[in-house]
Image (cartoon, rainbow, N blue to C red; front, side, top):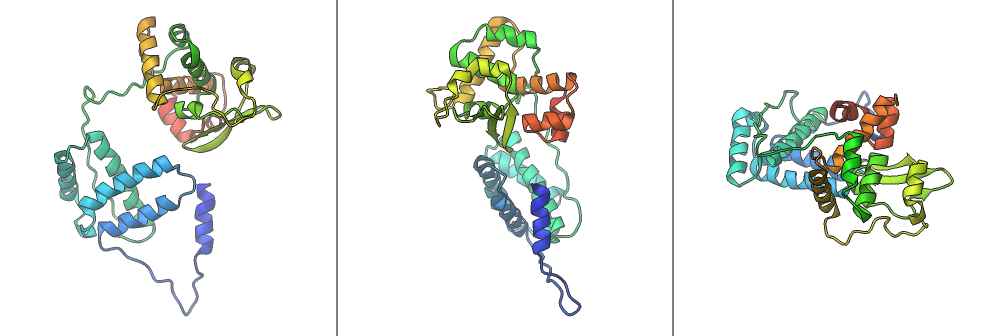
Amino acid sequence: DEAAREAAAILARPKTSATSAIPTEHASTMGEVLESWWRVIEGDTVLRDKTKSTYLNRLLWLRRHLSSVPLARMNQATLQGYLASRIGEGAALRTIRGELVSLRHAWRLGIERELLPNRPLPSLKLRIDPKVYVANHYTPSPEEVTRALAELSGEMALTVQLLVATGARVGEVIGLRRNDLDRARGTLRLDGKTGPRDFPVTEGILSLIGDRFDGTDAPVLRFDVKSPAQVIRLHVLRACARAGVPPFTPHGLRRLAVDRMARAGVEPSVAASITGHDPIVMLKHYRA
């Protein structure tokens, strides 16, 4: 999809001739580069609204502090000043790191569009204390999942079983509708941040919740809470504690699914299409 959009943009450009040349747009401040980046993000038809909202929030902070900074002054000192200002405003280091990632993306895009000279943006390493910001990347074994499942019941147990069976993101499972099953093709439609995809349905999934797919637009799983993803995560962690197994998260079940497919000899490109990953991202971050 990205290649098709880029090709369409190239074909849409006016053709050069011997008598006329395409004027090149140049930026003088960081604000112009950020605005150019945001126009690309805003016009992206693949990115979900929630993702765009995250990028927009980053843009607002970057624009607030860097909009009037000349491109020639985008140096290490300027980035250090941005870091100090954001810390003074109470921003977490992980939040600032996300903003700097978007800033680097905008900078690269500006170079590609010839808005600014081809020179690298200085790097700024943030030392995030692992004792303060703990990320649980543990991938459970099937036996550990079975023991934790024994401590769950009802919709929570069903949710975990679906996460294990599909390797889907927790939001994709929560968003399942009763008309997402195509019995004729044997596929289940999952819709996540990378767009909709069809998951090959197994007999195990059909025996688990086959009776719930009645063709209506009602949700498959029933949660009477405001933030079901957070509640699911909490219940899984509590189940792990009761079962005496290392704590894992719903996303750990996604890594487990990738690991199972890799051990079964599934081609990385096929596994990535099933889980909704980019193959490189899957191999780099999930195949542990």
